[in-house]
Image 1: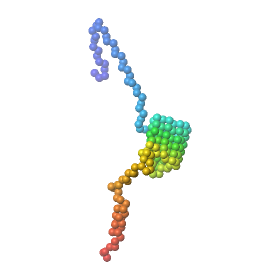
Image 2: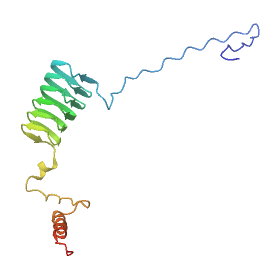
Image 3: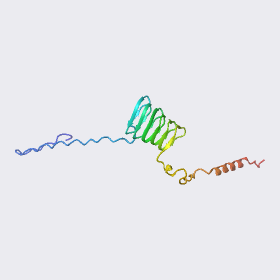
Image 4: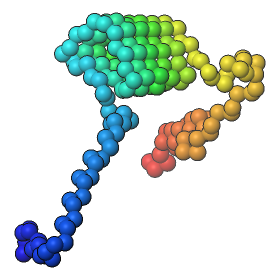
Length: 187
């Protein structure tokens, strides 16, 4: 009844038995796709390595590295990392540790703990308050390069609707102080 064999139906004698069908071919194996998130290669915090890192995927360095780094994906240099190398990535480079060498990537992001002693070449640069750079910054493929210094007018600064204008805020504070400093008429 459950999971047992199906009873066979008797074949008439003299009739040929049908051949067993050939087994189905195994499904085609496709190579795994490269993960879009995460890191394929990680150099741990307790690791020191000298040499060359070349990767077509995302790489994370948390230890000490000396040599050359070329990454087609994203590169993360963690807070505990000490990298003495020229660093290139075709995508984003996020630096939270220390790098002594030139840095080149589509987008470079320096976290508040990030330190760079070398030149940075990038399309987009993001720096958090506290980050340190000693070197030149070269912006490439930016529209300002074509416009030049005397190019089109710069955009007007945005006015915040949530924060009052400085003059308005100062007047409001002065008005409050004048009201508070007024001598009491009750005596």
